[in-house]
Image (cartoon, rainbow, N blue to C red):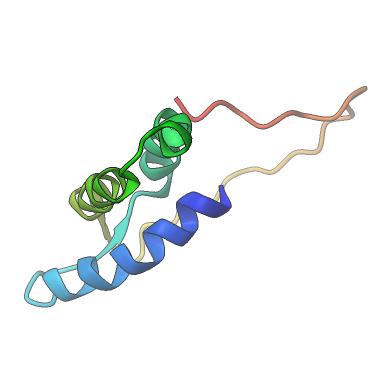
Length: 93
């Protein structure tokens, strides 16, 4: 997760510059970034030229942006359920 967030940090600035004339502000889809990073994490260790892979990931992160629409909040009922074990992380895909 830390590596995906580090790579999306620079992509946020590029996405913000590309949406200046649009109606809404745009942000990087972090779930999509985590999914693609999970698929390409092993390739970062085995490829000789990882800069090409990082550029491809960067372009993908910039391409998968979503608009931030104001006032799109929905009140959810948060109920606390007693569980006998800790909940694991949910899968990204």
